[in-house]
Length: 246
Ligand SMILES: Nc1ncnc2c1ncn2[C@@H]1O[C@H](COP(=O)(O)OP(=O)(O)OP(=O)(O)O)[C@@H](O)[C@H]1O
Ligand SMILES: [Mg+2]
Image 1: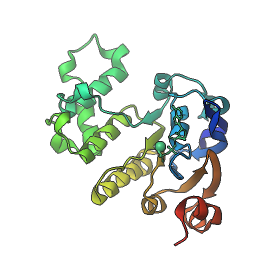
Image 2 (image 1 turned 90 degrees about the horizontal axis):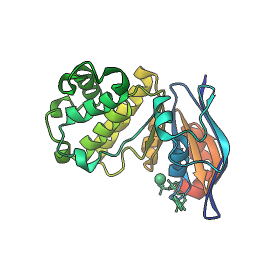
Image 3 (image 1 turned 90 degrees about the vertical axis):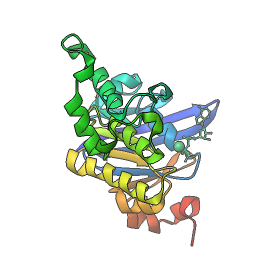
Image 4 (image 1 turned 135 degrees about the horizontal axis):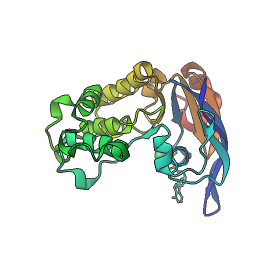
């Protein structure tokens, strides 16, 4: 079943077309990697999918609904999770409170009048922290977290609204190899157990080949290949543009 459908998506910056009419689908629960050289247009694609950038043309549908040009908050509420940057001002907040704040903002309209914020969503926050392996650090200030743990926290916030589609741009960048594997396994678990589709970018191709159900390859704003790990590895156009011939 198609969850996300992208058709002829195009974006130019100052006359420079960085995404050139790309089309692809993501099925419900599918794990799809978007790879390609630096500057290929991957992040620009993500920014259009989550509403941060308005496409010049093309169409994006999620669950059959056209979401092209919607504001980021509306797309988020409609079920597209995205990796959040943890705001510097929240650095003094504990890990648990940071997640609770995200949950609070999700439910704000319904719950704010009934209970003090301090004891709200504790159980739900604990469950999310469990999910990302941070329960032991719940009392710690966010400002003191190791980089890999900060990424886990970002993931907890990203899944706090139970997205149907999770967009993660280089989730393991800057991590040690064991952390990379752990975070990737976490993402795969969300898809396998939670039924959440995951679309991610990643420069570690071993990780991509090991993890993704399907791989999309971009180069210079165009989609140049699409397929499983074996077919992408063997694709001569991909080897020339990105993988290199060993
Ligand atoms: N806001 C912007 N204004 C002007 N040019 C931009 C803007 N954002 C991105 N670009 C340009 O668009 C092109 C695609 O950038 P993008 O960040 O989407 O690539 P990417 O595939 O994510 O690369 P990387 O692997 O390095 O993250 C690049 O040439 C970049 O310089
Ligand atoms: Mg990028």
